[in-house]
Length: 541
Image: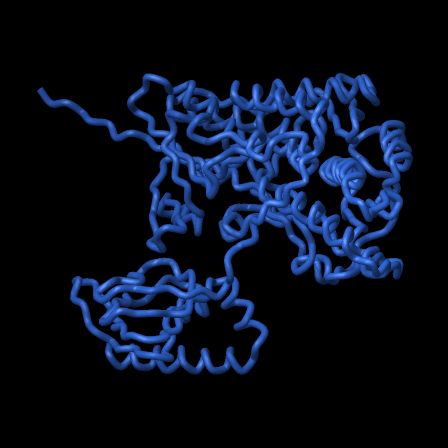
């Protein structure tokens, strides 16, 4: 008797935001007990961030770790790859990934691929913002902002010069949507509350500024709710500047498009979004940088390819407009997409996406909020209580709910914590030591850094298609290696093995790229070196 063996179908999800996670959770529940389907998810982080509560991390209302949930708790039956997605090959149906432990590239095949990488912040639209602006999107951003606020208060407390103190005590937020308003409200509450703890500070010296290019903040809400929010923030001494844009940022100033210069050492931005570079490189049709999908969230002309959340351009059949990039829509899209993938695998009809948002709510800090829920406009303390209740119920994980409830209770009776955590990254230029006969990187690995030899010796080898290895060169003190992959934006074209014990100076990709782009003499020298090495390799070939 002959038995037919059916290969397992792999459903691979890239991205662990709302769209990706809710797709994975829906799938793992639906395929429980099935042996013909393999579920996998790729994300650089091993946790899911519940972003609606992220502003409260700034003020310490919620503990740093209590807005995040481990992916392994949410998706225990999904294979997780905590890696960076380098590129996607839709022809070969594989995703190329890398991680920080080893630079070797790893290719993960798929039968169905869910694109849930979302968007990235784009600060390049404002001069100086990439160098001096603070992001507010992830957990690390919230912690960095909290540390900056405490640092400025500590510095100002011991600074006698009023002209130096003024920018320390001025915080500017660019962006008057939900994210910007909620964040600046928490910033305002936090610094005005802790100012009492500093003997030489007066809260009247604090200046909190919100910039918005429109005619009113929170344009997603009705005019009455938007004006209520503006009046409330104004009473709490938040200076709202409407009809202006941030034009440039320096270490000590925020410069507006009307010529106004605001002395500040702290500029936060929730403006500007760009498509993920991996998605931008795909051959699929795009609209405004987002992947165009049909009503079932499938990518046309690419069987087995799907998109969800911020990176999907989906027309809402009820409004005729693109679905907004909000958590509500991403969650609902994820559930619909999961059902449609299973329908495709089982030969059943797929259902078009349909969703009606229940409303929108935003916190204004200090026990107040605004919202439009089921057409009912609410504001003040009642809205704040409803806002907390709704998001607490949506927070994934029983233990996270417990932690947040305890945080909120303790916040009512305990003073604000003003501990500044040192989370600054290590130096960009570092030293590394290698023992003799150790491989530093292999041919085909990801190019992630450049090495300069302090002392010791390495050999450069290349392997041909038959597996034969040839020694190309030996490098010694003051020589560098690893630059070719970074300059050419390619994988390593050779293997580096130590001959003796070796000490190096190491530059990560970001530092090397900055130096290469802005120091012409260095760029010319390295380009000549690359040309020489390519010529030598060509002669050997």
